[in-house]
Every structure is written in C-alpha cells, then in structure tokens.
Length: 629
Image (cartoon, rainbow, N blue to C red; front, side, top):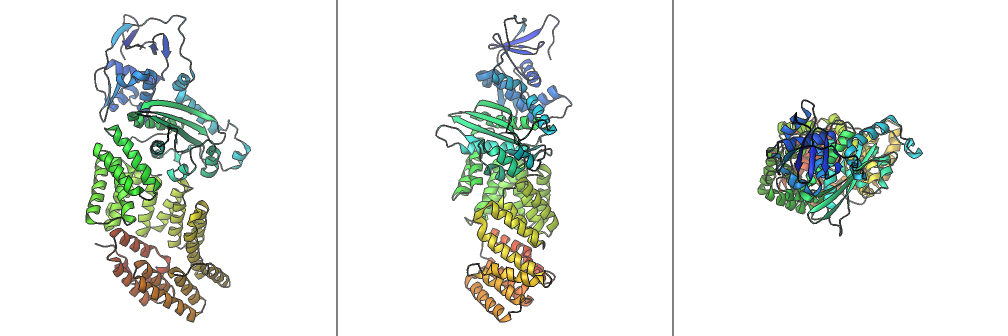
C-alpha cells in the first residue's frame, strides 16, 4: 500500500475519497462501508490505476500465501461495485478473460479528519454489506453448536449434515414473467459451483428444484432432503438490468441468516452468482474449486446458454431441439465457451436417443462438441462426462471411457450426473459392486429423483440383490406415480427371480405371489415371457409351452431386438440354452438397421439381464454381447 510521511494519504476520484490510512471510503460526507478485504482490493485497484490487473496478481497482492479461491476475489468486487453504486461500471471495468481495470482520473490528496457531525451510513443494506460474511459464519456456528432451538417437528427428523444445503430455483419476479430460465439458470450455476466443494453436501438439481421456490418449502426441504440450510432467491429483469435477491435460511428454524440484493446489468450476472456461491462457502467454512471456466466474452452468450440449459433440463416435447438451437446461438457469439460445447454434446445424446436422427454427420457433430468442450473447458466435469459417454456409446473404448470418467470424478465427485454415468459404464464392464455404490451416492444427493432410484434398482437386480431392488422400485413409485406401469413390470420380474432363489416351502408361496402379479399385466410379450417362466418352474409344462409359442410367434411378427431378448430370457430361464442363443443371434441381426445408439442400448440390456445369467459361462456368450467395431 502507498505510504507518505506528509500526512494521511488519500485518493479522490469522482465524488469519492479513498482514505488509505484510516481505511475509509467517503462519498461526500457519508462513509461507505466495505469489508476489510474488499477495501484492500479497491486500494490496490486505485493505486494501480490505468493498468490491467489479472486475477492472479490481485489474489497474490491481497492474500499472499493464503490459499483462497477466485470466489473470494469475486465477492470483494461485488462489495466494491455495490459501494460505488451506479458509477461502478465505469470505475471498475471487467476485461473478459484478462482481468480488471480502474481507469478514471485520480488525484492524491491529504485526507481531512471528518468532523464530529459526519456519521457513517447505517442503513439496513449497508449493515448487511459490511457484515455479510461474518454474519453468515457466526450463524453457521450457532446452528452447528445447537444454540438455535428448532421446532419439535424439526427435532424429530433425522439430524442433517452440518454443511448440507439445497439451492432452490430463484423465483421469476419480472413483470410479465418469461424469465424462469434466468432464475433456474442462476440457481443451477450456484448449485454446480457449490457441489464441486469436497466440504459441502449439496442436494442435486432434480430434488432441489422439485420443491419449488416458495417460503413454504423450507421445512419441506429439511424433511424431504435432510439439509441444514436452504438458499433461495428471486430475479426481476427489466430491459438490460436485473435485480437478484438471495437469502440463506436455517432449514430447522426458518430463520433468515443472510440476505443480499444485487442490482446489476445483465452482463454482470455471472459475477453475481459466483459471489453468492463464495459467500455461502465462506459461511460454511468450505473451500470452492478454482476450476470453474471463465465467463463468456460476450454476456449475451451466457444468457443464451442459460436458456439452452432450461430447455435441456425441462424435456417437454420439442425441448431437445430448442436446447441444441440455443447452444448453437451461444457458440455463434463465443465459440470458446466450453460449457456451451459440453451442453451441446449432451443435447446430441438426447436427440439421438429419442430417435430424431442418427447419421455419420450427427456423430461427427457430437464428436466435435466433445472435443471443443475438452479444449475450452478442460477442468469442467461435464466436459469429461460427455467425452466418456461419446466413447462409451460409439465404440466402447474402455480406456478412454475410464480416463474421462476418472477425471470427471476427480473434478466433481458428488455430481449426480458424474456418478450416474460412472455407475452405468461400471455396470456394463461388470463392476457391479462399484456401480451400486455410486448409484447409492447419487440417490443420497438426489433423494427425490425417481430415475436414480429406478436405475439403482436395475443395478441391484443385475447383481442378484432382488429384495433391495424391490425397495428401490417402491421408492421410485412413491416419488413418481406415473412410474406405475414400469413398477408393475419390474416388480413382477423381481418376484420371479426371488421365487427362483427361494427354498421350499417358501418358494411355493413366492411363485403364487409372482403369478398373481403377472396375471394383472396386459396381454403381450412381457406377460407371456413371465408366464412361461412361472409355469415352467412350477411344473406346468404344457402351459409353459403354450406361453412360449405365443411369445415366439409375437416376436417373429415384431422382428425387434427387444422381442428377441424376451424370448431368449424365457428360454434361458427354462433351461433351453441352445434356443436362447439362437434368439440372441436373431436379435443381433434385427438390430443392424437400427440407429447406433439404440443398438448400443440393446447390447447393454443383454449384458445386464439377470435372466441371461445361465448363459454367461458359455463360449458363445461374449461374441453375441461384444460391442461393435
């Protein structure tokens, strides 16, 4: 810092006086409060006026050898801009990807001591600004020590992890609405940043966003998600400006621990959300990763990216195509924005899986998106997830799949997408115990996701853990009543598997239970396959043969790989291995004219089916379930 032997040094710019010696910022006769670190950042900017300062230089100058993340600097800049008010955009310029510049006329003056009549500003907003981090940290400590008394209902619930938090979607308060994508996008980016911290337990988007954005969800968040804190907020957009409000709430008591409102230009949204994440992390004494990609050079690209993410996650009819279009528009403005490339790769997966198109040109575009994501955002977990998916579905290159999966896990070990993709590939390559462990972790982080519970059930069934699989199927149904058709089918098959492994006399009861479940199914391939298994196992061979005949006739009529799989499963269960292999070969032949991703899904189904377990020791097995070259 500057020093002088001639008296207290101060700097005058516009209508501000920055008194370095006294540690004050004056606007006219009014003191503007700043946190000590924010004040030091402002002093460094002013003393180095006219020179572009990189983030690294600022971090080294202010914090020295103390290890902090860029979020700490971001929070300081937010404090400074709030203190400088409307003039902040001209006084402290952000130079995208390069740093910050204080570039207005400054004169050095000898500071005058304020007269007794000058009083610091004591408005509510100023107090919150000056004590944001301290208040958050203190409140977190009080809650952790149990000094805040929760209500009886909260006391009866399971005690949440002390540094667990759910980030709810920020409510759209804009006149006329239409900005839900902005509220959800800001909340999701904050959530993603927090989730990369190894110190925090952050509930995943699916579960957190299912609760909505209203005050009445605070207690629900504690009860259903098991969290200690909730972060919620709102956005109000008017033209090129946006007001973002955020508050952190103790989930047990409903007490507001911290709140802040930011009035910014739209292009500053990226910096605001980084600052909010930094404030939460500092309050919970957590460390944030330094691996976040920088903001896009064109702020409009970030807005388009948020719109793309909104459609990507919503998945209404037509949304995948809209997501692709918005990702493309964002990249047209900034072709180096890695997260948009990663999002585009994810959109291609959805489009191909839904059967929109699967051509060499589409796969080339998919590959390009993956490679660009890795090039421009090498430390973004999603980029490595999309790379692992690309190599998994296209050529089952286990080396590359494992390489990118490991990198994604290192970057974001508690990201449910990372966990789900890792679990899926581990299951395919036969590492079922590890896959189950990863899906259980995904369920813990995303407890209200019916899909995660259903996926865990499938992996448990493949491992022969049928009772546990049924528990997860029930959890999926409880979370999503629309899941009932799949639930009825999956639990029926699980009852068959449980009956097969039961000892007399319990086996007889279980077969009766399985038959009662299957007889409620509608007519079709699944019903005939299940009936053939039950009838064969209970000695009703003539009925089993009749069910098999109906099943085979229907499969030949459909000429579909899925139908062939049902026949092979029933035949393998009934001990007809040779016939089962013939049907597996037939199914593989029927797959050849299908889109590549659909063929890959069918091969995965073969490898994971518990009904085909009797065939796996046969020399004919591996060639039939091998990946395509």
